[in-house]
Amino acid sequence: MTQSARVVWTYQDLEQMAPDGRRHEVLDGEWGVTPAPTTVHQSASKRLQEEGVREYWLVDTAAKFIEVLASSGKVFEGVATYRVGETATSVIFPFSIEIDRVFE
Image (cartoon, rainbow, N blue to C red; front, side, top):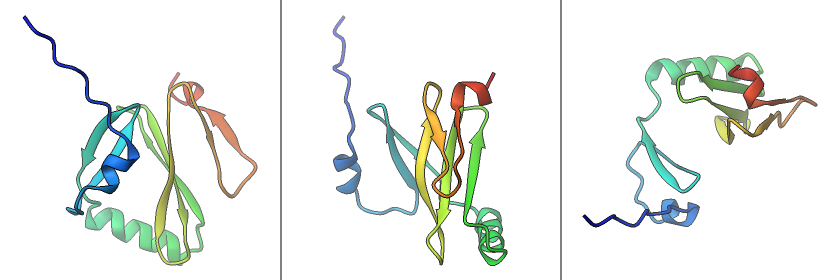
């Protein structure tokens, strides 16, 4: 039996992909794809923007990661994604937390 070599993806690989409306990301060399945001998510983001929210965190309890999104003035943009073993940090407030503590 032969074993396939593991493909390690990079940010440069993502930059070369044609936009397809989905969200592509590389974490620890693994390539992941998620669907485009739903209209519910877009409506919520728009409302947060209208209310003056400058940053929010999405917590995925199944995949155990936190994504920090910040307002650019017109839309929210993903700033960073943190996984177990890392420390999530706010880009606006003097706040950080170890991801391990969130998912204990």
